[in-house]
Each structure stands twice: as C-alpha cells, then as structure tokens.
Image (tube, rainbow, N blue to C red):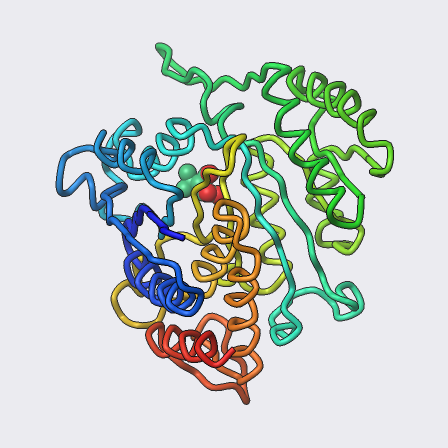
Length: 355
Ligand code: IPM
Ligand code: MG
C-alpha cells in the first residue's frame, strides 16, 4: 500500500519525537512492503514565526489531502504574549475543527515495566490499568462564543443532540470491543448541556444492551480516578472534562510521556499525537521520550490505515525496548538504562527489524 502522511512536528520537542516516530514508521513500511510518502507542514509557534499565523491555510489543505496526520506538539513560552486568537494552541483547535475530528481517543495504559512510576498505592493498580478516555473534541466550551464585556469575560458551552449522539455511538462501539463497561461523565446536577448529554447517552445505550453504563459527575469521576482507577474501562465525556480527566488518567499510569492519542472523524481519517506538550525546556537536547508519538503511529496504523498487524509490530517493539530496560529521563528509575531520544528510536527500529 501507498501511505501519504502529513507531518506537523510543531514546537519544542515536537520535531525530536516526530523524527523518531517517522523512523519507526519507515522501518515498518519497509518490512511490510508499503511505500511511505511524508510531507512536513507548519503549525503552532513554528507557523507563527514563519507566516504570522498559527495555522496557515496550506497546512489545513495539505492535511485534508493526506491519509492521516501525525502531530508532535505545539506551543511554548516564546508565544505566551501572543493574543488569544493567534496563539499556537489555536492551530490545534483549527485542525480539530477544520478536519472535523470530533472523536478523541486517549488510552491510558499502565505498562507493567513502569509500574514503579505509578504514584498510586500498588494495590490500587494491581492487575494493570487500561482505560480508554473518549473525549468529544469539536464542541462545548472550546468552540463556543467567547468574549469580553465592559468589566468581564464569558465563554459559552453548548452542544447539539447530534454532537452528543455521534460521540456516544463511537464510545459504545469501542466499549463493545473491550470489556463492555462505559462511564459517562458530566455535570448534570448543574449544567443544561450535561442534562442533554446524559439523556442522549441513555438513548444511545438502548442500542447497546450488552454495555453496562453508569453516569458520574465530573468532580466525583476525578476523585474515583485516583481512588480506584480499576473500576473504569471506557470513559465518555465532553471536551473540557475530557481534557482534564485525560491528564489525570495519564498521570495515574505513571508517565504522560508514554500516552498516545487519536482524533477521528466519522470515516477512517484521523490525526495522531502524543498527549503531552511541547516541553520547550528540553527541546533539541535528545532528552524527550518519543514513545507516546511512536504509539500514536501504532494507533494511526490501526485506526486510519487498517493495518492492525503493523500496529502490533510497533507496540511490540515498544514493549521490547522497555523489557530491555531502556528509559528516557522521564521514565528512568534506578537499575534501568538511561538513553536519549535518538537511541530510543534506534532501539525501536532494531526491534521492528528483528520481529
Ligand atoms: C490537549 C491540550 C489542548 C487542549 C490544548 C493545548 C489546546 O491540552 O490536547 O489536551 O486543551 O485540548
Ligand atoms: Mg490537555
């Protein structure tokens, strides 16, 4: 098969980790007999510096024309003074909205090799952790009207029933392929959008009688995630709650440097990125952990390109290098082997070749 992938390395460590992930993808393609064509596009601070805009039209157009997009990270203190509408983060929202990527999948997996990095008591995570956060990504307060008044400011959270229904369906489909447990998170004791959310999720649930559904308020969900994370399988939630809970879920697993994400449309098109940020303090120093981006490539192979076997090849390579004890600084513990971004990439390439 011929793969045409748009790359958006972005800012900070973005270029470091995307470079390694592409190395791994290229190796997988060579091995499986696929041809790979990549095109690097500008977004975020890099685009502001080059063009004055966080998301040049060309980037959106080229991304649309590709089979899927791999993104590093955007933003950094350099652009902190830039006004809201022109901030690097605006590029992310523009890509999500412009590409129609309403479904954000954020798996939070505890790697047994990294169990020591988990900040919770051992008994809380005994038997492993495998949570899938399904976050609505193109609605809610992120995309509502906002502004300033004479002496205040406002942001608006709104959802249509259709928006809730399509993300709920995705989440139920995913739950059907996992352990058939779904927790929908809202704030229905306060927010009208949450009452719509809850009623709509219950409606969709009727089409999936095998899935056990429960509803939690977001404050309680945040607490339950650290109290007893093993109660969760699929967590379905709106845009901002998902932003917050996915960070929390990632920390529960021990390293935010390990977790990938997929942002999907109704068809197979998607954008893939690590859930961590651009870590400008270690950019270009060969210190960043490329594993979340590499695992994002695995998600791309599986969800957008229909290449489950190739995806497993990547995931097994990650497992192998962890088994070998290789660790970038963020996941290093005593007795393991500290390595840099490139060395981690090289080890993955080797593992793919040998598989
Ligand atoms: C994320 C990030 C983004 C978000 C920011 C950078 C706009 O935190 O992908 O979780 O809030 O969605
Ligand atoms: Mg976030």
